[in-house]
Length: 547
Image (cartoon, one colour):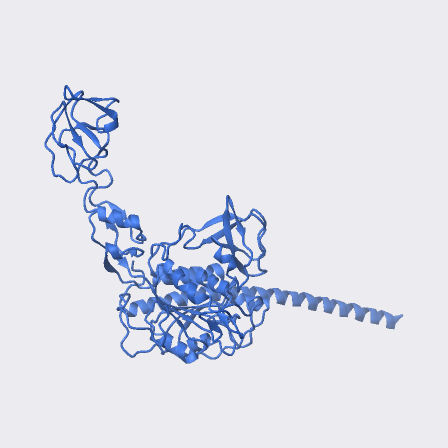
């Protein structure tokens, strides 16, 4: 019995040891997950601080405070007017400074973003400040490396608002679509004198009234003679009211006795009726339009009425669009493995609707030298590239950025489609660069996530008020990432559209906006944030949408 007892004790001890090992393993796993989460949060915060510090240093170097409120061909952009947005870079000083970054390991393509209608070669590169000793995989640790969607979008907007902005004075006929850099203050009372609001008769005192002969009072005819009590005279809309006048009687509310030369009111006459008193709209010195106001046609009208001939506005951000990919055609039907470029025709008008000045759309193919030349010679505020943001054999965006000393600010975003988008700042105070994935809808996602808030900040536009709407039917989400889904408004809810894959444009072409679907999806009736499309409210749509 003793050997069996000893064996039982050894078995029990082994079981206890195994249980302790399992418990310790679980604790280690939990601790590792907590550490990974803390590292991710710290990395995001550090990336934001580094990016804003970088912008502040560059603005200080330029002696500007950070908070002041088509196709051309060839490798360099054609000459154009000097950019007023900051000091000019000395001739021949290519933005190639800064240490070269070590080559990053090639990550695998993210699920659902492998290739597309615009030559997408996707994947999720390593974000700045994160370890890159091991190749990335599609594990939860890999997903944690991507910047959360809301944080990436907020960072882009803060960077845009921190960018130094010059201001210039524009005549009214050239101010449309710009943003006010100086407030519009009333230069005079509006109206500047008492005027008639209607065609009819101006009268003094109680009626009936003797009709004064003559053509009456017309707009723009100078000062009218005083009107004694008991008299009436014809008056046109906008004409100056005589001194001591009591009211204006509309033509349809008056009756004249021609034989006696008398005027009778057919309704009660109230003192001051149908008279626009001086200063009714504003007094001299009143604030009419604050800094940050978008100049629309009514803004132009108000400025003109207030006596302005020109407005002080923020220059439109200048954008270079670089389309990458040897497989892209600019005309005709796809053939022999070649496909049509869907992004080149789309991005220019889209960027203009955001208030940008697009200097041109250049197609560089898969040429690293041409890309490097385009980046280091650009004097734009923002460079937009399409495709080439992954780590394939002809995906040159990351290596070229590293070789020119650019600073990666966002390198992969936890959003579908569009996961491999990126945001960088070129060396030596150069322009920002937003790298869009090559798949068309993924590129739209990058445009709305990074380019739109960045451009809005650079242009001085006020942030859009976020709004939410319920979904009519359940919308499937990604297990871990935010998902952007094209939707249309329908009475009191939004309806998700089909054809919303990364390579598709059919859904977005019919959409009013994109629903921001959180990880895991939403049930019917759940409210989600809606990203409006810039032309959704324009009927009919006109190019530029007042920009």
